[in-house]
Length: 509
Image (cartoon, rainbow, N blue to C red; front, side, top):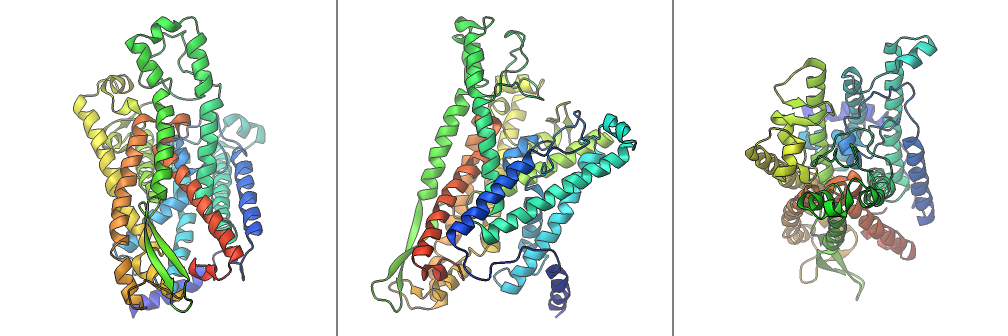
């Protein structure tokens, strides 16, 4: 009775939160497509609007997670989808631990869950922005403050307001795509960010703006601290710089340079991961269906190998990103070293934060490269770092896959209701919701666990070799999987346009 009373009191408040109105009737495919393209264009515009008053000395502590969070450094959307993902993690953990007594299979509780998630996103925007400002990562420009005749404290508040507005815009842009477009805004922004990074990783002729030589000291090569970012210009430099020469490239150090800093490993890993994800996305178990009243009307319910998609990997990496944000803030602001230490580039080099930091390429697990990237590191530390990240990816993939399936209506009970409501049944079994649920329960829970573990392994392999553009294994997996799912979504939307009766089976009202 108490739980029901709390729900009844909080529901009216959650309904008052600004929301995008749902369409009252089916939205035509062309209109959905236009909304999706429009939001994508707006995203790119916002990613190029710089935060006014931000100093050039500011540090992007989330730079390593850009492919996942889909933000843009120095722009008003620098938080990207971080607050949305973090809010989802918190709520899923609270619901999974039954601290929040919500049954997301019930429409009322699902509405409360979504309302709480939106409210928590506002909170997370604040909690992810203020530490970066107070921690000195986002610094106000003293020159601009002087020109405006205000102190740097007020300019810091103006910076906060801009980032807050950017975070809110991302939230409602995601909601617009989810209700009026195709797919979800979160997925769309991830693909946009990864595509942008991948193009930069191929064609960018500039050296990295901030960073240190990773894995192999190439200071001897023409006095350059960093090779160009882009793969093509990187190789142009390696092959034409007279201080390097072909003879050096054919030595053991030269071959190591070509494989790591020359990104040959990254190129092969990018292509292989792309093909693997496409193959895995097409691997599925198909449960046969037949219409109970229309003879000859048959169909199939596909249960993919990665049934929960790769989105749980966002939650895993987001959790690691928040740990690093807190650790970096405590170290830089309060000189708190119990969790570990960071170098001047914001990279964790010791302690718990080092072991919880994701593997990002060969320099994190090949001993000779790791010794240069982390001076003084021991072999057992390299091995432990690798094993911890492997455990986080695989165990986290399983855990969040289960939560994702249960909280998004993909569980066996919801699927059984969907099949029952559509008028379909499983041949050879009675047309009964409990019977259908029993059959699909043979597959969905097992495939969810196997798929969560498998995608964790794929992410680990991709992270080990690094990918073009520094997008990371998680970013590449997400992008390829989302593009494949968008392709399927486009196909289903067109199918519903041709056969309106399919809307009911595919979840459209």
